[in-house]
Amino acid sequence: MRISVIGCGYLGAVHAAAMASLGHEVIGIDVDPGKVATLSAGTAPFFEPGLEDLLRAGIESGRLRFTTDIAEAAGADVHFIAVGTPSQRDGDAADLTYVDAAIAALLPHLAPGQVVAGKSTVPVGTAARLAASVHATGATLVWNPEFLREGWAVKDTLEPDRLVVGVPDGEAGAAAADTLREVFRAAVDAGIPFLVTDYATSELVKVAANAFLATKISFINAMAEIAEVTGADVTQLSDAIGYDGRIGRRYLGSGIGFGGGCLPKDIRAFAARAEELGRAESVSFLREVDAINLRRRDRAVQLVTEALGGAVFDRRITVLGAAFKPHSDDVRDSPALDVAVRLHGLGAQVTVTDPEAIPNARRLHPQLTYIDDRDDALTGAEAVVLVTEWDQYRRELDPVHAGSLVRDRVVVDGRNAWDAAQWRAAGWTYYGMGRP
Ligand code: UDX
Image (cartoon, rainbow, N blue to C red):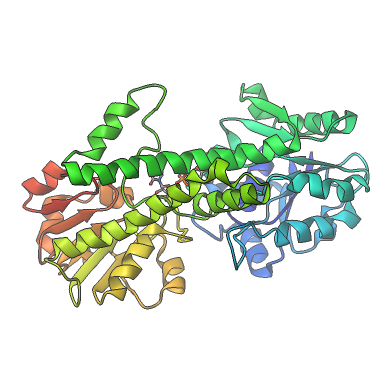
């Protein structure tokens, strides 16, 4: 099929490359000429495992191209809208400027029978608002939320847990659902659930899923707060409750909490939308989820302060990680970087290292010291703080070796990623989050 993907950021670039890998003919469109040039050269503009291979294969096959010219979308069977929906500058609600602009730019190039498939995460009610303008061209608007995780984006796009398509009532909606079924034929044939819903449900599926995940993380971090005053170990608690099949161990990782370009902004936008709908109380717990999450960053700073005997001023602290999670170079709303910035703000001499995220972190916070090499970064530290659980730190950093580099063997494990006993055995004073 012929496919256009409008917006080539974390979501769109992966989606375009993945669609080409399925055999579709794909044109990726973005307003940023720099991004288009990078992608056209077969280079990923951000770190995402597997993306570059897919880009190169697509470009070499001739099935994948990138352009800044929206007119090249003309003739595509399906137009995916994959632009960002950041928070509004003066509040929590989603800023729909880019979605509205993408649809407006696309309208003159639409033709009857085509499908416009929104992938961006939007407040419930957005598709219904945009439908009339799309339907006036004879094309059909559907909403097809994306659930990909950064770091696993290629796999999540090609083998999602489920596909959801929100369609309008009537024949055009049913036909559009069939068109999307055809686009995702490989996944559908592999037995991946394909759910056809109305617009509102499809929009809610995405925000509800993210709200649930954020709540799960904050739940265990709230338990960590209780563990801290009772002497319990939250990691054992996660294991023990996680064995209950109804609860499950995934997303019960405690520590400095969630960040990134999705969960924080999406739960805030959801709360803002619920308020507009007169149902603020229905999701008021999301404000608490947000507050618990942010408190864990304060707690990490407090632990480092305690670990250093009450003050961090002028002390040498090495922060392992800047990305909001491993396998990503994304530092948007990164709890890891936030902890580093706060320590720096208190006068500490902070050195940050990260396998992938240093360029992005430096752009945002040039005031911090960055060192690429992990061991160089550790050398002479008076305290080490683990904030992004990259394998290079979690699995591959030997406490005995690390101990030979630092000045003082003091470690704060902000992700509860290490075996405390192993670090203690190597002579370290180990502090976890919600662990004795
Ligand atoms: C998330 C959703 O998983 C995805 O379905 C949605 O489409 C976009 O938002 P992503 O932001 O890529 O994806 O990251 P995810 O892997 O979900 O992690 C989010 C944050 O939660 C990270 O900062 C991570 O470190 C943190 N996290 C995750 C925890 O603190 N504990 C956990 O147990 C899991």
